[in-house]
Length: 175
Image (cartoon, rainbow, N blue to C red; front, side, top):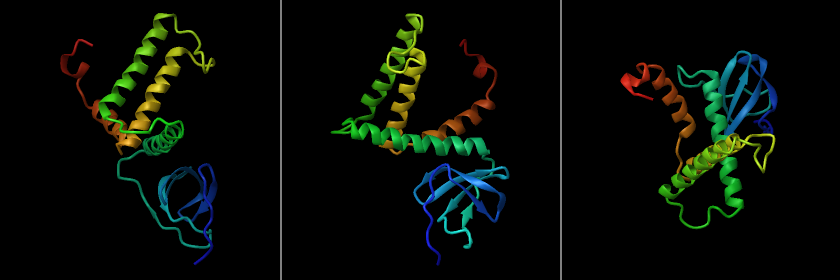
């Protein structure tokens, strides 16, 4: 057995199944989501080029951009969780209702930013207040997803697919 390579997100490498080469999109445990001009695939246990690489294809019907979104969501959720943990926000019990209320508070801050003309955010001024508060909502969702082991990235894809098949205004809703 050959020497293991250290593979990182963003690395490029060759694979016998995709001669154009691949780029690592995301890492999850020992699996790597890799994409290239020929498509996208999960690869397990990456070794030197001389060895046969074992891999598993994505679920049938999953588009490359959907798989990349879900994998990226999970990687970013890991980062959001780690940051919150380092900053002391994971000390003690974190009941789900309280975390949902904090998500709601970020949406309320977005509403207030809009009510004040949506000026540049005071912490990241290259973005508007609404953009920054929406980002906070997503970061809180990611942190909560990691905390409670929720498959939110996959659920977004499933829900978008479901919504594609719904009736106009979901069968008569006013808004």
